[in-house]
Length: 344
Ligand code: DOR
Ligand code: ZN
Image (cartoon, rainbow, N blue to C red; front, side, top):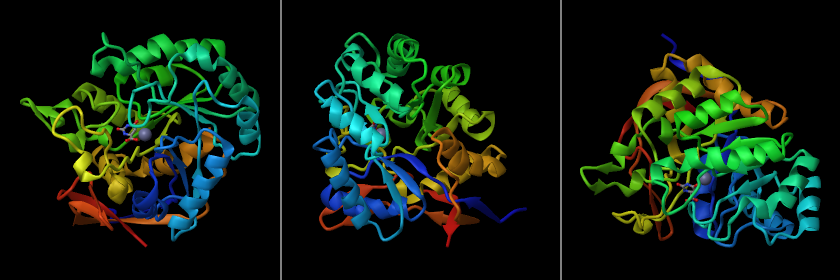
């Protein structure tokens, strides 16, 4: 029985750090474990130009006690300045860009209303060899919340891939077996997988008409069959899936007991441990490193990290809350037992 594993230091290819006191509170949870973190640009004032990206990067570095590399995608919309966009990509001020369909999730009201309106930007991304990170959900009145990912893939993603065949795409927080299959079957596309999409199903959010806001996220968690496919993809399948926690903190008072609640699950205090738990449950603990520390770096053409981290098989209970100044955030897996812990 192996009680320790050592893995190359991971990267988190999808995290929300927010701003202000919240940013100060959450940054260290991710930076203490990971080397690189993709810091999502859906801040209150979205990151739409190089000046905002540089300021944000400084704030993140200042808030962290550890050396870590924040990578900031540009928030896409049809009002971007094309020259600034291209310059930001060329100078690596932006780490590619992020497509949020309007109103698909938190702070996405200024996102993309229609894919065709950003074709010019996608052309620049393709020319510059910069990645397009996608929140893959199509939002429309006649589309059920559980079908949004499927509709986005079939209606929008296929259009993008056909028009820009060399564009490197990441379908973020894949949540369906349809998404897993699509990534496996196509080229130039990878996917991030969160711990919560491999631990929860819709019953954990909407059981007997009772809504649990702490398990509510976008894309919403789906069926057992989806969960199983996501676990297989992460633990066994191939090199196209990698770690992206989508850790997304909201103050506890913003978590309402109905669908008006802010979506987002705050997993940063225990994410790598949860991934270890899942891989162990799937008898694939030896594959954790490929998913957490190799596949993403290879996909994005980064060198592998030089440091290692060590996890011990030992029980601990996740604290209920993370608190700082007057902010309180409920942790994912609050008061639950995890069998793995990072030891430094
Ligand atoms: O649940 C989510 N929360 N999904 C997202 O895509 C965004 C995130 C947030 O920023 O709160
Ligand atoms: Zn996200």
